[in-house]
Image (tube, helix red, strand yellow):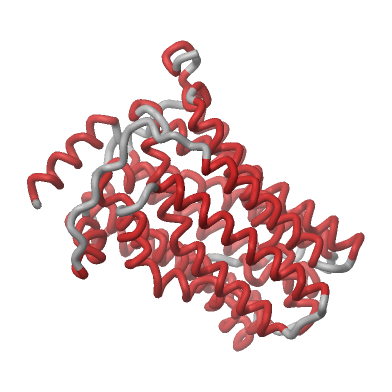
Length: 423
């Protein structure tokens, strides 16, 4: 059945390549979300230190920041589906090593080392996975594929923490969770090896040291991309609260490991509901205002969560934050990929991954450091206020972002043509 013979809301699923890719994302993503929850609980149970929780984010982020530029060049020079399989095997290996370390009660620095190695793998995996997607679906259904990918991620991010919390509550040990993550990533590696991209990858240009910086140059020219990823970087850097959830679960909301799983799953439950609604609607006609207002909503939700002492209000605030953040994720992903030609997608996505890691993981380190100094409530509430101020500043700095309209397949071709003419 061709994509034209099925309803628009599930057109991407009519293509075998995308089905294989999506199942892999589901299996690997579910395991990695379980692992991320277990790591936070493992570290908190063993140290009861906000700074140690922050170091989890630092260990995950630094390798991505340091390796992103060479990784982007590699992604643009090799077959992406093969590199995807290799990186998923790397995740499987690090998950298995964490299981062994946990079972043997190795010191925390061993866990941090394993997380750093996983970060090295992620430096290559993230740009590979994102830049591969446009070659797996028809251009007219790219946003549909992005929306479904976002929905699959939310399913993983809801189910993974809940199952991890349940397993931790029953077994009391994190090693089983780490092992499940390794198996899921191994399954994704096998599926990725069988992918057959719809169009041939653009042949790489002659390698030069300066080629690593082409992604930066492209983003500098495309100011809407620059504005969107800068907004995400600063908003989540200040406003994210994930690293502090074990503290909120045990000391403020007085719940257990399963309660932590519920809190960690809540943003993704909201995002999944939003992704379902977005899959049923056409592309945004005014993408820029939708992006800016979604970030405002995220900051406001984090302020409510930071002040809440009721677990249900906290869950609702996190779910609302996840719902509006999903709008930002879809718009930003479509914007980055649609305004980047194929021969630069790996390098541009690698630069984008630096912004994402700095916001998510270094944001966790920032939250832990501020919480160690001022307390968790002050850390979360001040971060939410900072998100609102950042959004106002970016909207003033880049009026073209406020005017950003609908992204269509024609924009992809136009962007590619402009990029080629600049070379």
